[in-house]
Image 1 (cartoon, helix red, strand yellow):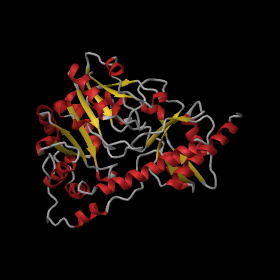
Image 2 (cartoon, rainbow, N blue to C red):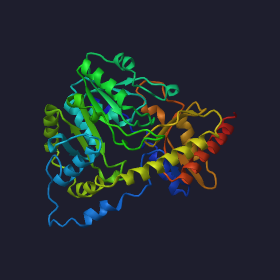
Image 3 (cartoon, one colour):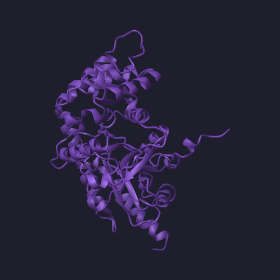
Image 4 (spheres, helix red, strand yellow):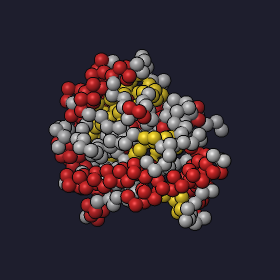
Length: 399
């Protein structure tokens, strides 16, 4: 049989493709510190399982395609603290933020249409765009400017007649870049000028550091008909396996198109929606505690990375990722060395090579993404193993 050209154009996830090698190393007795994937070790709040245990319906039936009423009600109340007024018609519950993204691309893109995304970007965006017949066109950024992309002139230079949307990862993955509300407004003005939609991926919304205030594109009410918010319980509540996401928009035509797809896939897990409704009703103190934990982990990573000669990075302002460069010509070869040949007291480390987060060929070859999702002592040890592994790798190469 022939595999479709669309699928052949896709790449394997740079976050997951080395997992089999890491699993083999672990089966051989080596401990691997997983800094490659955004799976936090922060405990999922107990209210999630409590709500499921108290679920007393005798049949786990299909939910409505748009979502369970108790979850939608909780989401509406959650967004009120951002002065964003939603109705049930503005919300579709999805199978994780990933489905919200793929459904959004399918709804707005025709064959060959383009979506602008600042690079480096979450690698699966390319897969989602290709699934919809579209193409990711990168907005170039540089580490020296903190991967900033908010200058309207830089974005406008990338717009073509095929451009349909600007996708903003806010805060960013893999860079931790954070937009201010004024920067969001400038992007919205540009979208209005060129009749574009904005896909605002805000799954890390509360995780902003150093005195920054969480913000949302949804707060800009004058641009509500152009904004699509993607949200999720995965990162905010450390509930990645629950697979509950959200697509939110005031654009009635867009939401009607999304509902066609939502009805076609029937519904999202009834039980996970019950648990997630409780998560969205957690007090503000929960966010303060979790944000402080991630900020401490970030600072521990930066402190340890600064011990590596030739290391270069911008301290991330949000999310829980950091992109940095190492004095290595081939990061993937270095990672294979760490997993297959190197160990220190029976331990090694895994990160995500950053090349797969770029659409521009040749970029990211000497960069890695670190997910600071483990407790501080484990993050320190993981980065220490990168440093020790780099010393051993250079010795092997005769450097």
